[in-house]
Image 1 (cartoon, rainbow, N blue to C red):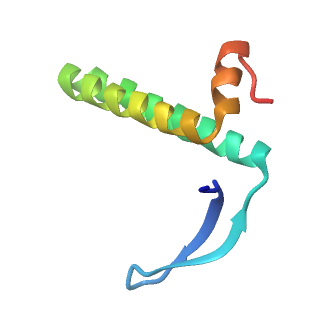
Image 2 (cartoon, one colour):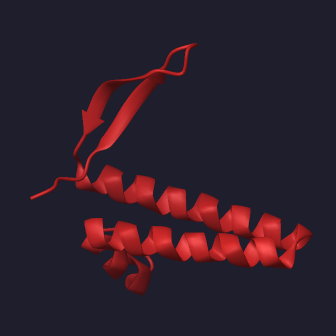
Length: 86
């Protein structure tokens, strides 16, 4: 079965990525997923202010991202209902 982890990476000047740490703590994974969703939603709002179609396309991406996170981190779905990450 697959595991979910958060990788901290270093990017070289040539663009190569090197993982320097891996975090498996669920609360940190939930916080990171929530922040990623918040940033994607903010981008969708900004894009919609300039172009309605681009904003709608970005909202679709937010929906796909949310579904992917909820499949990997079922607690995220529960936190959306209760309004807080557990």
